[in-house]
Length: 255
Image 1: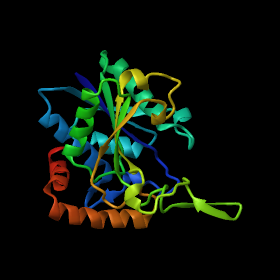
Image 2: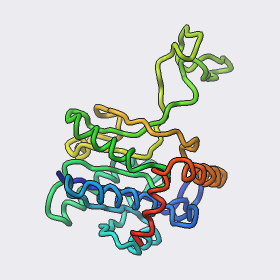
Image 3: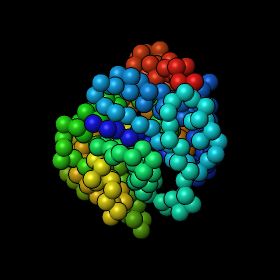
């Protein structure tokens, strides 16, 4: 089975500017994602043929990828895929098309890892890939964490001055409400047939399954404060849960 790993990053950002280029606890933020892919490849070399592609409009980000010892296909993002409203699925689809053209063979599944999610473990990644392989009818498997709020119970909306629950219900305890999750944007595993469909714009256009990850408190890096809090959380996780530190420790083997 052939797997294409994609890493997609833009030059700018509407939140924290150039966040993809930041240094996280002494190493380039992107290297945590590349280290996770490298560990997956080392642990599963007898199961899969694995390639890596980075798709970016940032020359600095492409240069960082080129400074590793990994074999990474560098794809310069075309202008029409670098807009604020460009669906990420379109960028991943373009990465797949370019990789298959360059390599001369096709892929069975495509795994996209977000640069700004350094706190994933190799077990998280393997769980997501294995779930997709086991559930052949699923179009996409993505990672989630348990939500801290529930729209059936303790989330409200304000419409024209009228405040009400996001989803109307009669639940009097959170435990009674349906279980809900936050999408943490860390791991997405796509079926090729789903991804190459040009009508697909989001993961919700297909049949979905999920894998649960440890809640690391920070879902998105949209500010300097988010970034600093994630570094604090990372230091705690590295001391408490060795599987998180495995990714950090492996960085030295890819540079």
